Length: 106
Image (cartoon, rainbow, N blue to C red):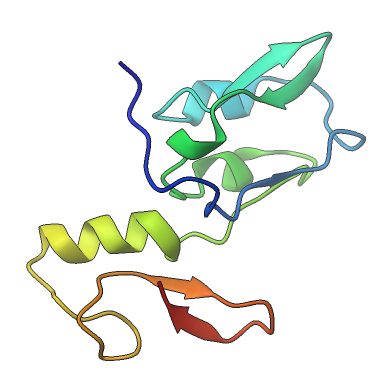
């Protein structure tokens, strides 16, 4: 069974045109979010992404983007640390960037 978080909330983005198919994302991703197909990276399990940022930090051509520290990853860390309020001081554990770039509680 694959670990999944909240549906359709991850900030992960892939620029397939920029990808050189090196496979580093596959190597560093702890949740098998990526696969290499036809010598290019492909996101195969978007909802399994915990937004740690390892893929983006290790991509030599910056084909991947993820806003680490928001969404599911921050929420899970806050819960694990016993924090009950998120960025807005609300009784929610995670902070998600809104469409205008401002943090909004999810």
